[in-house]
Amino acid sequence: MLISAALQTVSSSLGRLETLPRAAASDPLVGRAIGELRTALHEAEEALAGAQEEIRSRDNEIRRLVEALVYRGDTVERAGSRYRAADGEPVGMPLCPVCELDGRFITQTFVSTKVGSHNECPRCKSVFSPNLGFGYPDGV
Image (cartoon, rainbow, N blue to C red; front, side, top):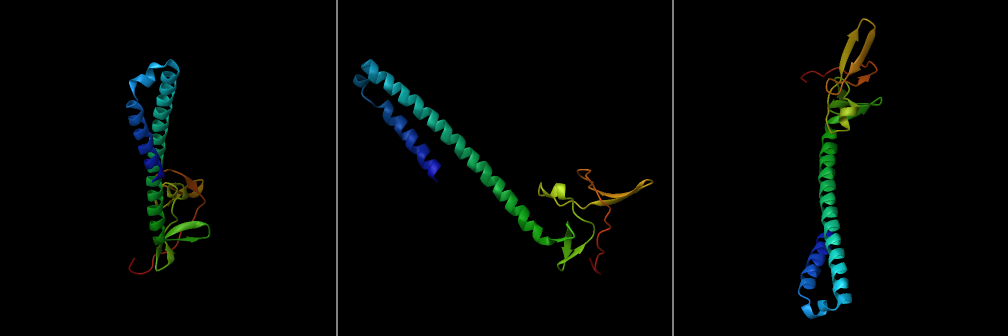
């Protein structure tokens, strides 16, 4: 990985900087230049370490999203809603699209009240237009 190599180079440069002859540092201009170089190398080292951690974090997020996409293979989309699938056909109530963004596949429930009916996610409580879903084939 390029960042790891750059981090090793900066660390190695810091090590070499420490071994400069003390005589070179006795000149005030050289001493100041060495101090500025040391500071710049430390800042570069910290920035590279932060970038490396950010890349690791993003790699983990990519892995999580890929796993969520793999699971979608057990679902099918019909009329703008995603459903669990049996033999490639939708079954049951639609899945919550809000929870799906988090990688969760929560089935909406049908709620009937005195003033009307709607679908609702039992996890996030999002409300959707009423949809009675699809029946279940025999044996499911």
